[in-house]
Image 1 (cartoon, rainbow, N blue to C red):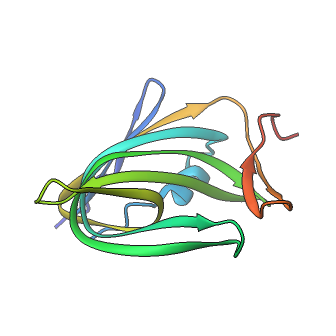
Image 2 (image 1 turned 180 degrees about the horizontal axis):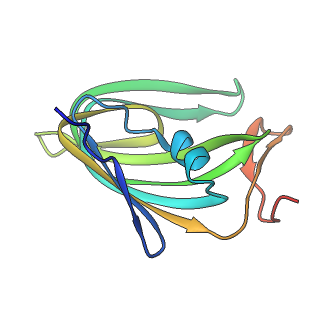
Image 3 (image 1 turned 45 degrees about the horizontal axis):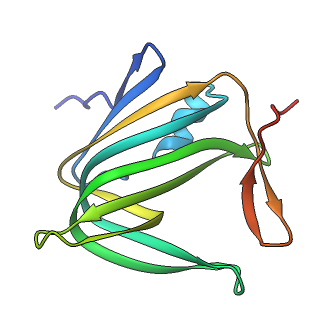
Amino acid sequence: MTEQKRYIPTPDGFLMVLRQGGDACPLGTLMVDEDIPSAMLSGFGFAGQITFGFVDFEAREYKPKSYENLEVTNLTGSLAWKDGKPLPHLHATAGSASFEAVGGHLLAFEVGRGSMELHVMILRDRLERTTDASIGANILQLEPAG
């Protein structure tokens, strides 16, 4: 069996289709392999397992909560760099079979039964994240890295 193609180029970036059981966040690898300076991301699909985080600024950490078998109705984020390494920043909303929705900062994700479709829209400038010491968060800098 041959390996399925994971992404194809589009006029403004890439379209990725991730399959059941796969990590939905191979975005750092894509950034390096395709020399992506920065990008915006959107997507939807099925989550076998998903972990959201809600930031606790006082403790300077995410409070995680995991779920199984949800449908991701919206995934959005940005792809930038920090200290020479890719740093995706993703948020999502997902719904259950009972039509209840949950969401937050996307900490971990495994594609569920079906697939996950992601549109990566490349930006022309290489953007960096720097840590804002006053809040302990990585903030996207709008000045191109030089």
